Length: 246
Image (cartoon, rainbow, N blue to C red):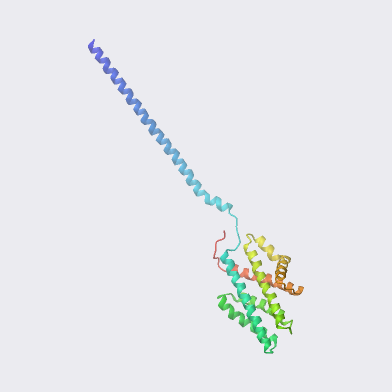
């Protein structure tokens, strides 16, 4: 009897310990299984995140809208050309007045314009193309002819016409800025091709400065203004690209 009782106790002890071992192993197995599932889940998330990261530039590039407006630096570079042109106009008017004070033939003065343009532009805009120099020279000759064909006139009348011609170039700056800020080619072309709009803007500027001239002078100024802007923009587009459009 004692032997049987001892045997039963040993069996019971063994079963209790064995059940604990099994329970502990099951917990370990469960933990290990959860770790595997978490690892798979994390790996899946990381893969998706990497795929989304790789795809995002492609989606952005497809949605990106082309913007053809000029940068501030590019616009300023074009303004410098207009600055050079107005400086040349001032020089030519001053030279014309000196020329007339010596009783010289004003028609001979036009022969001096080319040399003055080349000399001044070589300092103000080094490397400016010969074609653009010639185009600027033509515009300045036209402007000086507006004064010469009015002769004989007084010094004050010459200065009055000079102010009108200066305002023409000032208006060129405004129109050029509007064109350069346009984000689309259609918007840009609309401004350049709408001579009525350019005319209205020029007349508004003249009225602000109380400058009244005949209609023929205004028409010639509008056409010259448009040619001036087109010439400057063509110069810009002929240059190597120095900026990345947004």
